[in-house]
Amino acid sequence: MVSRTTIPLVLGIWLHCLSILPAQDLNLALQSDFFSFAHVVTPVEGGKWLVGGEVGRFYGYPAFNPYLAMIDDEGNLLWERRITNILGTERGVVSSIIPTTKGTFLVVGQASGCDYGLPGFLAEYDVEGNQLSFKEEFEVGTIAVQLASGDFITGNLEWGSFSRIDQEEGLIWVKSLYSPYQFRLRDLAFTPNGATYALGENWLFRIDPDDGDILVDISISAGVKLLQLAGRNGVWALQQGKLQRFDPDLQLLQEIQLSSGISFYDLREINEEIYVLGRDANQNTHISVYDRNMQLIREFNLMDRHFLVKDLAYQNGELLFVGNKIAGDFEWVNNIYYIELPFRMQGSHIFTQAFNSIGQRPDNPLDVAVAGVSYQSASTPEDLGYSCQSITFSGVEVKIENTGEEVLQAVSLNSRFNRCQGICGSAFTYWYDFDNLNLAPGESISLPVGDISAPGIPEQDQVELCFWVTKPNGKIDDQGANDIKCERLIINDAPSINPDYQLRLFPNPAVNILHIDFSDGLLSEKQGYIYNTLGQILETFLLPKGIKNKKLDILHLPPGTYYLSVGNYSEKFVKY
Image (cartoon, rainbow, N blue to C red; front, side):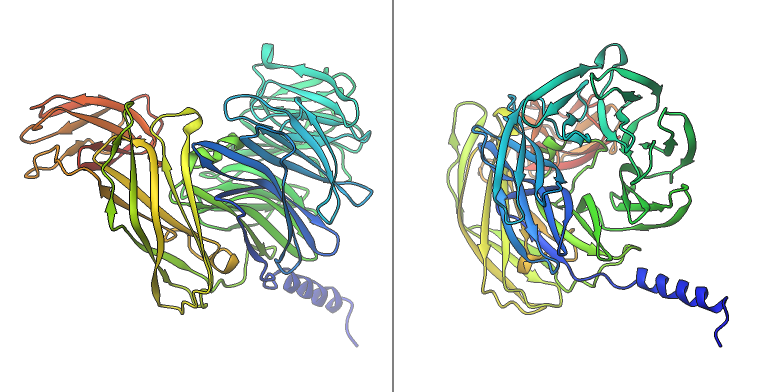
């Protein structure tokens, strides 16, 4: 006979083993254009998943559309859609996906120009990807919650106002709170008892959904996200460094301090557990999991700094994380405007990856490294007459190496040149697909890219040509650090600095003043440049002939990594 104490013990061990079973190998890269960015994922009946975000490219100006994709339980792409209803869209994004009782989905998003406003939108899609309805509405923002009536409370991150929108009639009211509260919207929430909450950087409000009036206000510190637990009233508020739980009238019930050294940016309820997402000092994704009583259950690091996790969802025992695999270094900032992302990184594509509940994923046998970039010739730079030049690289080849354990059949290559002038951080992007490679582990191959024209790049004696790999065999590979390779190429023959000495920067790192030292002085007058890690010119300065040292005021630069370039020399420095 089995004792009564043995039965729960065995059951508990069995349930624990279930929770740590290896995750299903659901691994898919989504990239129907040069850039793709995930923002949200929603589970769909039948083990499917609906992913929303944006896709696009730069061709002088940005051209990005809101994006939807449906994938099945094995990671196969069933369909994808660009939302192109609003003409003139330069920046568009799907920010929310809300299942309806009819088995369809309400898709909330925004379309805009990079330097001018366009409407937000509400669209309805069925499971086959058919658009059933579409409505433009200027007041629809990237943050939205649906009320029991079907209306939406919506606004934009960091804005000082939010609105109520009727799906058929449009705007009902707008509430502006920037004055006197200096309010900057961070999140919205709606609870089963009809309470509606608005979180700002320094305030948390309970508002009347009928007119937007403030019913209760409390001051907070560095608000980030709200969470309403399924079947419960009240609200949880994530702030930098702590997590608080409030009753419906915003009376504080409980507070815990979060792990130090982590920049937390999101929280989700998954299977009655609360997942708090953050980035540690090394830019790795960190997950803290709590029960409903705010007791810490487990913590784990999920993915390295090249994977920017944006959302997660749960069904059938699987956690699906979606986000963006980043090419090169990316200095992540909490509460970053989502619309800024393409301007802050060299490239990105959407990843979807299944994990189990303790952060384990299947071993990934895929890994591809960019080993080198070369070209046969470069045209004589064309003077465009406004501190820019145009150049064409001929016979470009990119050498890649299969550093994984699986035969590589297909891969995409990407490149980008930033323009030295133009609105919206304009750039030119390039994308090349290669298939039927049959590249065995340990082997390498040079892929022919051909000619690349770079119109309107900064006028200098060298240029950085970078390539990175995406979608190896249609998936994400294991590592991110080896995805990109840059070569600094000399495009003018005349030296600007005596080759017998080196440019020296000190102190490095620097706080407010950076010194440039030339041991024998410049042979001729030259222009100097400070670039960020994306190659964008931040400052120019004149260096007269014969100068031996110069002091630069860098106090106004944000902390980070920069490059200083004079003629054929370039040095990296760090601003604290």
